[in-house]
Image (cartoon, rainbow, N blue to C red; front, side):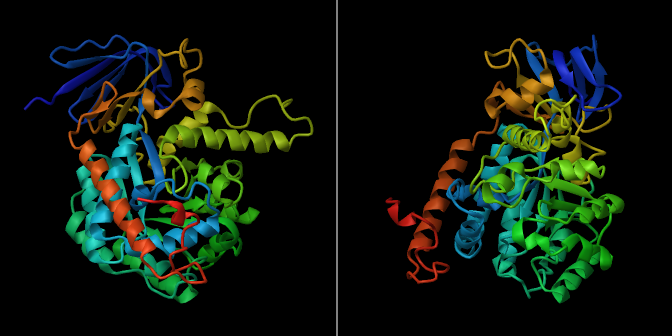
Length: 465
């Protein structure tokens, strides 16, 4: 059977491929699941044509670290400190999640991501207390239609810190049950607590499991006070650093630990918006770049922050430029900016794909890669005239401009609307899950320590439903 063909024409094409660059009035030809050709004046018969006039065409965004299960409790912590988040969610609500709540949280978050142009997402899933919770999380990712990495992070009882509970070996069962195909849109990784969150004996046991599992690793390192005890140095000392490890946050690492990450070939994930909001430390974007590690970007938690990559890009560049200017004797007088809009877009695409181990299949509009493609309207009042496409995307882009999204050649959003028919049902089920979780929390007896009792969440007693 001849594969279906789609031709996007006359767009500003940001390929994020150093050999192809930016193409004005460019075309992108998709054959079946693959990008077949990128250039100008592509002529082909028997294909669907998408008129790209007035748009920016680019690779889909890649979010390299998000806790999808929290989508049903989004924004409840927008005015919380980091300590309140840990208490309210990890010592409170997390234990109330049923498998069906995990399912709808993952599905809601994944569909939200697709709607905003994120075609690939690493789900840092650390609230799977039972095999049923794990199954629900993975099945939601498959149902979403997006490219996803399921990073198995264990359950709530593993996050009573410092943890003495080894990582669940159910991850081996899940590997065999769900991830035997080499061509699946959903792949597996290991979400490691790391030495800052567990006792040394448990950290060693977890690493033995990683070797048995044979997957990439994503680990929180250097997030706030917990991250100041040299976790990367400890990992290097015990043979746990290599090119398969992605280090998340990195805000509070010692200076020499950034070089250790670079020397190991490891990757990094920055969540600038959450890091600033929760006080995890200044985002490590510049410190990572100084040692040659171009970080990827991530949303992290929607409990407090928004879930789109446009916001992540804007937060990343704004904070880093503020830090760079503050370090200057005469701020604003340097010859050039240290971090460009083009580089931030790379972080949001190809560097995210690299951190997920997927840069060979996605992250750039390179012929031969899978057709994970994003079409963004650039002809509105906030974007036109399009004088600097990268600058327009970073500083004026938002999910409402996302016109068309393709994942592996399949259109999942067209003319600004998701093509799936169950969006209203997903939202309804998310509300029902939210109501159940809040009711369960409020029914606990109030305790003076505000950890397990009804006062687990600041101000929850003011919410009446």
